[in-house]
Image: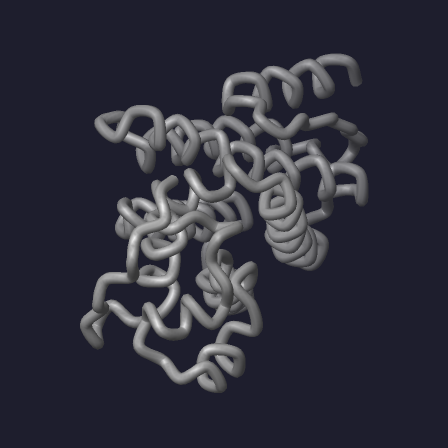
Length: 220
């Protein structure tokens, strides 16, 4: 990425989207938090108070998404399978609605191992939200809760990666289909009588995740 001068940012663009756009243009390593504050039209004290660091601004929307997901699951009247599908769909739709920002963030992550590690930590936070909900609202065993929570996040991430490669691909529809198949394997009559352990590798696509889940269930 080339080191280009900052372009001015209008008031509606201030915030994470503008910061990510600037980072993608200038380069993550070549940009300081002070550069970002100037780029988005904030004072440095306001920027640090709101975001903390240039690393934090990359993932700023996840704090909001996690809060909204927790509230949705806590207040929903849907059955557990429908609830986790709805929650995951809303997260994906957020990223699709901000297509340019989502693509630029992915480019930045590809160039920074440290940011990819941070992304894994954030993924684990989503798993914890789903796990807490499933523990409270289903009869799944602890291992099943962990396996299902990890698989939900893995399928979401695989869906988003596919869409990043092909924007014409119907990501939301395919996410809902894959999560429906996944939850049917766990949240079905008799599912609370079995224990399922699944290893989900980072980078696996949705079909691989589902195949691993089915293989584990068939082995019971």
